[in-house]
Length: 408
Image (cartoon, rainbow, N blue to C red; front, side, top):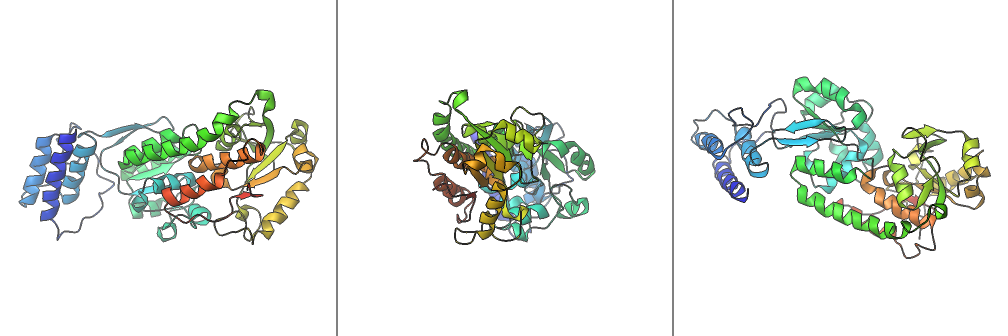
């Protein structure tokens, strides 16, 4: 493998040196199969050489894009297509290096930035621009291709992606619509804490960023293990009872199939809705009161509630009047005010990107552990690894209010 990589790199260096005056265009999404291959889906050294040398002499039938991509496949994929199983259990074959991506799921953007592949994003949803455009550099400059619920297929074809990343439930529907254009759909939700590592490895495999993925997974797991070492010692009867609520609407609560559930349980909490069917379910206020939650955590961003500054990237501790007002109104909400959590002053607000998105859910685990067990986690500083996440992995300044009231 190492010899193949060196051989192909040398060949490509010679090729590119001879092609400097040319403009290298993105590989067309419509082209299928390994370029420069004889059709058996296994590119050999001889096939690569027989494509590169004639091209250099101006006698070949292959384009610069084709020989460039062929050399990449030979070097990094051992001359064979990359076969992956996505999070929907679909078998997906990728025959060329991926240079053009549309991430449809809002949770799939930060993983791309972590893998330092943001330059490959050729289109984004308007939903993402509104929710994360503040802290993901370059988002606002990308073409808009619809919302997270519905792609604008005409816009998608205009930007000509090779890959569209979506959630598991929409993968087949979108794949059928994009198949005629030769665009590959890969399901990676990045919402499940348990499946996150596998999703990131799949994405890294596609992008040739395996080492970067391994480094992040190791760092992220160390942050989680610091908490789990203590919460795993808790007996079932010692775990605090928690009611979690999504920002979508009142009384919408996460079950065991949601990312939010993983945050609550990893932090040592007992999610009172954990055994209910579905991913998020609507419940009655009377049910919540009867379950007697000791802590309430609401996953939200300020824009979901009322206009103004709040739990977002631009907020700060001196400018969160609306957040305080919302928290007061929550304490006085019919139904919630009767719970033990409200009576004991244990209602907390957590930004959706650290509560429901798996990429940063380990930060939500830290905030929740601190709220659930303040004495046991007196020395825990989730803000510190949240800051490191921004500065070291997203390459951005850390600021904003992501949890309220503050944990420290």
